[in-house]
Image 1 (cartoon, rainbow, N blue to C red):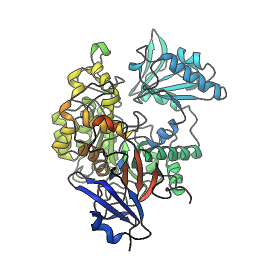
Image 2 (tube, rainbow, N blue to C red):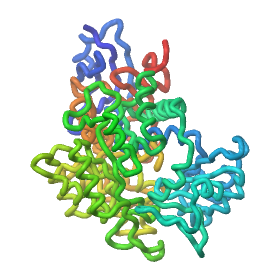
Image 3 (cartoon, rainbow, N blue to C red):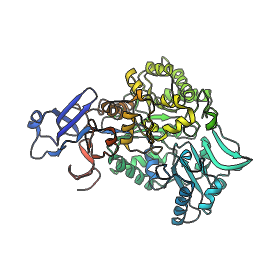
Image 4 (cartoon, rainbow, N blue to C red):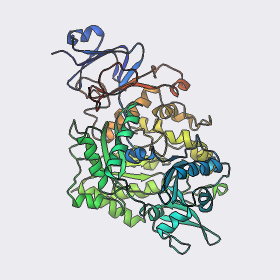
Length: 553
């Protein structure tokens, strides 16, 4: 039987410590042979599609181990306030005003991505300032970290929030001189989000497909949605199922249910949804419902990540926000662990990491041991050596976003000081100690662009050129390993993807350059030319590989 696909003419990275090949053939969605062109020639026939790398690099397809795919897709139609484009209050207000002109009065205007530390005013916008841009619309804009947001007066009114509204557990409503500023932190944001009309199933399916197309164009064949249910409840599950049934789901998805009390983990369980953690997802499954997420704290950039030592006084001081007291966290983690879910728990500051780690350790029992469960601490940015040792002993995986160092590293220095900023997200230490850190973006918190993430892992440079923790740099091969195999491992899928050994799923990315031999700065302008899932192209920049998945002949 001849091969379906031949890739040759350049280097093929098989995986860390797996070496390289100059040719690879794919049959029935899996890698059938690798080696020299002569080694695979007997499998190539008249019907074999051929891709000439012409000196480019092919690798295992990228795996986006921690992002929010549906919110990312929905956000593509929201007001873009990302810091690389928006550096002034006037620009924020101008973009909101432009959006207000396009929709009827009374409809919500949503925006995402501003960074108050990068704005000319050096603070968050105020409700009254948003009012000037859109007096006849409720407005809600979310800081880049996703843990802080600002509402205008119309949104406050719809949410029923006044200066007398108490702070909810694990959240804060900012007041100055007894007056609401419009700023909400952490779980307080639900007060506003709960009164927003949810998107329809059709819109969610459109957003899932749009997000998938964007990811495919950057080399991703696997991804995740890290808090399913926080936008539209259980309807999000049905939207994903509809997207899969209609052939509009492009990535293999590791789905993580929202497990906070306001989330859907309880109702999803009651509706019959069960985890596939113990046995892992079926090899060809597009949707694996495997984990539950609980928030431990906030973000270091937004001053809500929980630390033992305070933020610098010049940044505002304080030690951040715990989303839950210890007893509540321990109860939730124990409950979800016993149900069989993988625990994918958000914790950035060392105090929050300790709270989560203790909760996981307390969930361990003879009847339900945590060994082999691959519980994850999401972000895990600022931890100590003792915490790393305990995580390794229990098989608890760090899921970091090296890109945070690129986008927020200078803000970490400003908020926490140079020493703590340099020690953040210790990628090299994790690898050397035997952890499996799955590099990811947390998009839409950061850009989903993998090339900035790879560049950061290799250089430890911020977007301003500051080098933070040079001893934590990775080789290009190690960086790709963290973006491929480690992501698969975190999702119980390393037996099927993450390398290009014979028998593995033919999830492949072809880059426009050989990422392993160019200068780091050239990585930033590299592109994905081809992305295959199971040997079928889901993105083809130059039309060189045949019909795309999900596109009719």
